[in-house]
Length: 461
Image (cartoon, helix red, strand yellow):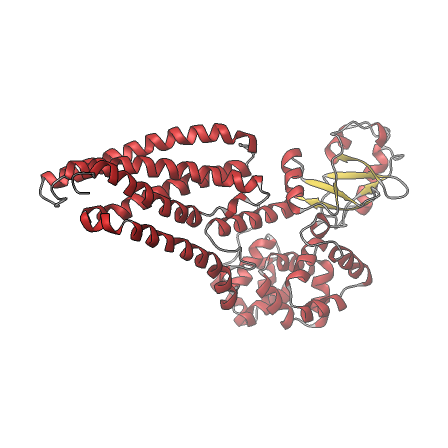
């Protein structure tokens, strides 16, 4: 059972009283993530005190959970010896991400503090292209030889397993380091001790190349339901493993990027409060400027129907109602399609089925909203809560039919755009809700005034 972390106040009281032995005892059995959360809440001077009393292995693990800005601040406050101890005990994959995120001068200083072995591992990982499997892997795994027996393999794990990323899976390699197979530790425990490893039956081998993209790595984990995957070079030599916990972090990062794009901005490179003001403006202004230009066409469309609006001012009252309904229906459809494509519930070839389904859905939803709009106009007119001119019934029909058309168009446009982007090789998430709403706004006005011209011709128009 995991110990509960001490309260922030209790921790600060121990620091101020100088009772460092008690402070260490209160933290030593905590999960590293709980320690990191406690450190984040402390002022910088007290954070350094708490960090220095932690055991070295716990300090290194907790350090990996800190956000980049706190890592940099903490590193600057540590002595050279303390910094060297933390860096050398960090998991190689976590250390690689730290080195990537730090400024150049900090990275240079950190590399100079690594032991020769860890420096070689860091340079190897940093040598792979960004966002590839090589950047996320760790070289800390257990490899065994095919001529070993089950007993030999278990003895090898006992002697060499300490400090490895995971012991759940062992990797069988030949004398030249080429990956032959993998076997789960649980399978070995159930096998006869004298059985050769080559004869142990387990799940088929699944590996990934070091140059595989992060998207391919995530897809492989998802498809084969593994807790770790071996990484090989172009000749089949094993160079490391990628574990599921790293992929969970990666999936969270990708989801965040997709949500940002769907909201109509470029993905942020850092947490919100850590993003510099000029970067925040630059990330957000691009899409907003494009959408602003797009919305200008709304004014152009209204100018095209200026005479009709002058003759039937009542039509202008329902413009926000019409365009918001179309934009909302389009955003709904886009959200559904993007998520379904991401989860592989839909494929590109399903666009015809989706098209038919969304037309029917749009017609039904538009009819319901149209009926509500029609009743609202008629009831308000009857109760004298509003004055919609001499032909309120026809105005209601025009609004109702326009809602059917605009909602149907918004639904179809919103559902088809992600398919079009995927077909062109773009991320469907770039079909953001604001973009879809802008497109539907302009076309929705044309539909609205076009219907009004037909319905009200000879009366108001």
